[in-house]
Image 1: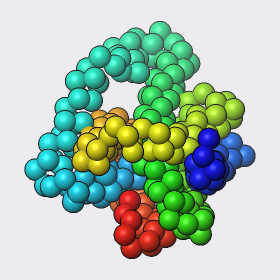
Image 2: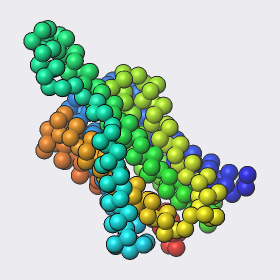
Image 3: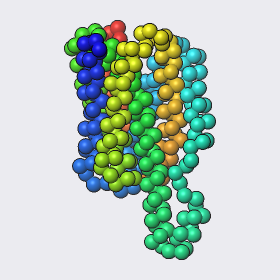
Image 4: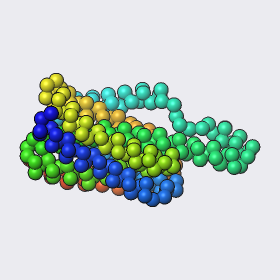
Length: 276
């Protein structure tokens, strides 16, 4: 393997493993209550929406044009809207909850808690998928940055590492709440970070030979559509249910502002001729 690729993989691991650092903040503390979990769901939804609209879709429209960028974005939305019809909802029917309560108050409460945990676990898995998809282009950026010089690669890897920490929290916290397993929470957050070195491998061995820049930007725009749909369809309703609409909306915009700021500082780490 080329030495430059090895360096890029090592640098991307620094950024990718920072999701593990975020997960550590979660597993070293007690599982949160539902309101705190709802606030975090809102924060994570803000992260995902900012990535989707202000990063991936924005870059696609700038690179391949407004019309093509929108077509790619909404193709991702439609694709996952269709897929979502075949994904079983991790909920219990309302009637079964009522019957459980009538038969036995404790059993009804346990059923409701099981429903909450299934919903939250599903949301955590969705977050992990979305973060993983976003980490692919970050790995590509680290590779291209390291090709410009080691200093650029290091700066970019450190900037990515800083803004990946809250992403690790966003993945680990719902999984920890749902499973009560510190290991499962840590493992899933870490796996989402490994998408970053995988992005290095893809851009090093696939992109130069067979994937045009226009197709790549279009695919990333579609990823933005997928992430936007999953966020609005799954994460935001949970945030409203658990934290209340007003508090959840505040958390969403806080998450968007945080991610936008981190993307801005990430952009500053790149040389002028490069862009995320």
